[in-house]
Structure formats: structure tokens, C-alpha cells
Image (cartoon, rainbow, N blue to C red; front, side, top):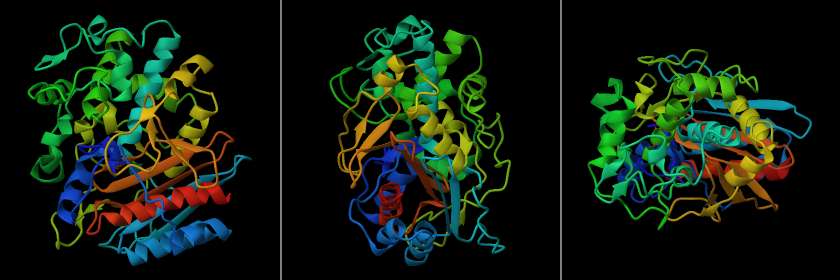
Length: 408
């Protein structure tokens, strides 16, 4: 899922897509399941440098060599990465194979499902509407979506827009109930946004609004419906016009209803369906279960352009960008040390000083981890497996981001 059932820092939910960083991963089987579901969650990384990460920092072509080493040592199908320097120059790298059946190479800067990175796009549109005076961050959700949120401990009159974007609403994570279906026989099922919300409303609230923090893809499906209600237009159209087209992301798109294939050149995506089983191709799925929480398709270079433009003030006015960057401490295992969550945006300290801003995403077949700095640098690393045989391999992959940003 674009989103994992939990954030990945699911490493939690970085995303699958519906998800973002990974939330909690323990034993191999449990970790794989959690990872998969949280695909919508953010992704997290290990803070311990390895030979691969050191190589990425100190060699001009180090990131490519580091990717090759990680792919070989962790037996991953393939990997791709892109860097953007202060002068706006892009470099792309690949490792492994893009198709295990044919042996085809990984296409340079190929398209992948980016899971919970979608959340940052969604939050950006909501904050643009705030800047236009059409939405108030501290207004109750009921002002825009009357009677939508009603359940055990859940009331849209008490949950604010800000709490949705910051994951402090207490709404249960609907992907907890969809993980096995999305990675199994239900991968071709189409879900309407309201069905996803109803899955969450059938459970009990996790905590009172504002009383805690917990990654939940439900928050961002509600945010997508809010965008549609306020603008009177489809979510996909709004995110395309307001973000994708505005900054020229030529290889990023929101899949149409029923669209299961990836449009342009792309590596195949894989999973390990159960411990000890061989890799399974899971490239073609119905991504509707992630919707505004994790359905986007993009490339590493486009993700770099997006996060660089966002942090650089090209998509939001200063007041709204400041709100987005106002963060709270992330609770739960699996996130990078020091990770904090703003409004659809995470921050984590870099080993060389300063912060990396991004999100991350896990979705069937793909794990992506982008980051950008305040001085204009950005990097994104993607591997073409979400449920790997050794979940810790994604930690080693994510560690490349810190060393790449610190070494350029």
C-alpha cells in the first residue's frame, strides 16, 4: 500500500499509499507485513554508517557503487537513485535488474509507485487553500465535511484540519485492515475513498483529538475529500494543476480509476509473500486503496524537484510553509533518530549538521526515501521491493540518503 498500516519510520508508514515512514518492525514476518501495509507510511533509516554509506559519501561515483553493494549484499532485485546539487544539476544511478524474468536493466530515473510521499502533495494543496482563505487549519473538519466523521470516540466537530495533517486526530489507520488483501488476492480491487474511511470508523478512536500522535492514512483520505469539497473539483485534478504541472514534474501522475499499470519506463516491483518464499512480481495493482494518502507514481528526480521546490518556497507562501515545517516528535519505533512530523512533512537531523526534509513511502513493490535540505540539495533512493526477505535491508538503503546529502 502506498501506505503501510503504520508509518515507516514504518520503516513505518512512509508510505505506502499509501504510506510514509515505517512505524514498527520487529521479527521478519511481522516486520514484512507491517512494512507492506505502511507503505503509505514514511520510510526510515538506520543511523549506523556501513561500508556502502561511507562509499556513497567519499567517492564521486560513490552512490552508484553503494547501491550496487546494497543490492548484492541484501539480495534486492534493483535500486535507483537521483541527486540534485545546489546548482540544479541532476545525476541518476541504478543497480541490480529491473525485471527478474527478462534480466532487463533498471531504467535510469524510472517511474515507481511512491506511496506515502503522496501525503506531502496532499498537504501542500490543503495549505494552498489555507493561503487562499478557503480553509482554516484550526477549524473543525465538520465545517467542510459535515457528519463525515462519527464513530466511537470520533467526532468531526472536535477534530481539526491541522490535526489531520499532523496525525494528531486519533483516527484509526484503515490500512491495518487492508494489508493482506492489498498484497494478496485483493490487489486488483477498487476502493472508493468513503469505503476506506468507513473501515476506520468501524473501530475505536486511538486517542482524543490532539492528545497524542499516531501515523494514520485515514487522516489523508479525509484531507483528500476536504480538497474536493472545498474546490468542487476532483482531487487528482487539483494535485495535478496546483503541484505537478505548476513546477513541471513531467513524469509524475495520479493514476486514473482502474489504472493498474505504470505508464512509462519502470522497474518491476517485488515482494516476499511469506518468509522463505521467492520474490513475487507485484507491479500491477489497483492503487485506489492509497488514494490521497499514497497513490502517486513518480521518479526519483521528480521527487527531488518537488521537495526542493517545496522547501525553497515555490509552492507555498511563507506563512503556510512555516506551518508545514512546525513539527512534533514522532512516537513509536522504526523512525530515524530525531524524526519529527509537521503537516505532511518530516524532518530528521543529518550527521553533518542541519536537517533533511521529506517523507518517504512504502507501497507494494517499492520503497522510496527522498530528502531535501534548506540550501537546495536533494536526493532520493528507491528499491524495488517492499516486503523483503530481510526487512533491515531497507534500513541500510535509507542510510544512503544521509551520507549522500552530507557528502555533496
